[in-house]
Length: 303
Image (cartoon, rainbow, N blue to C red; front, top):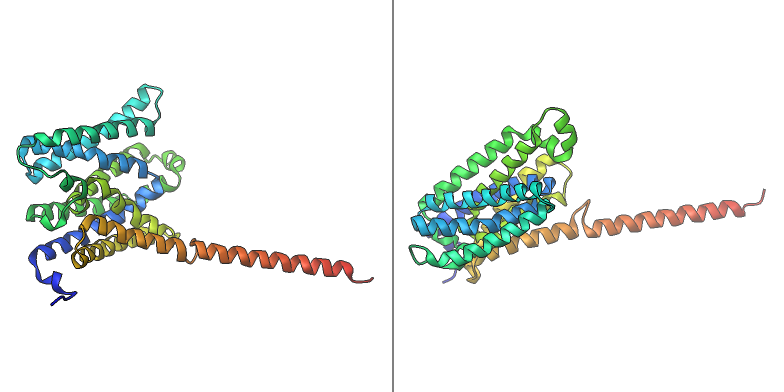
């Protein structure tokens, strides 16, 4: 007999739910920094650049988590810093250089994956499989979540200036470039923790959508950061349960749930939602008509 509580009785689902909370909250918390710093395109490039590192790690070390982790970090670093180097030494802009490199890296990863020491399903890397999470993967998620959140909290004041006014931050002696590179490094770590859950292709959704959702609802940075973490964790858990109940892949289900949250915020947000803006526009139009009518009435009054 089917029960909505059935997933909670299986050990593999319990492990997957814990991972969803960790991964979802960490990515959602980081999402506020990525959205406000406008690094979504760079994050997309870094997510796709993980694949060749995973492939090389699988060739050299098999599916050992440590080997895959090192390969992914090195590949993302080469693409990120390589794009900056190309942009500074040629006529190409940053986004053009990085987009070119991550496309080449992604293609290279697909070519290399067939030479892995053990049989590897490409879909496993592209779209993830959180139900196959090992204890080592879970401990890696714990470590990445701790490092990411503690680091962001430690440099929160500096990041506030960098996010909203980089010029002022630089004039105050804050190393804007160093903090940006640190944010890129934390982004890579968060994406690596997401690979098992939703894969290379969809990891950007878990990193961007929570922050974008809360950005439509508030002007407070603190609410955006912590609220993004809550949205990310809640969306990941609901997406995982939904995938179990209706028998669909977990990665797309998680991103779909987060996408629905973004769509609802876009429509019904009290301040920046489409409906709120339409009501505000109608209200201002009616006020304008009333002022125009009163002005016309005053002109017609006899002296």
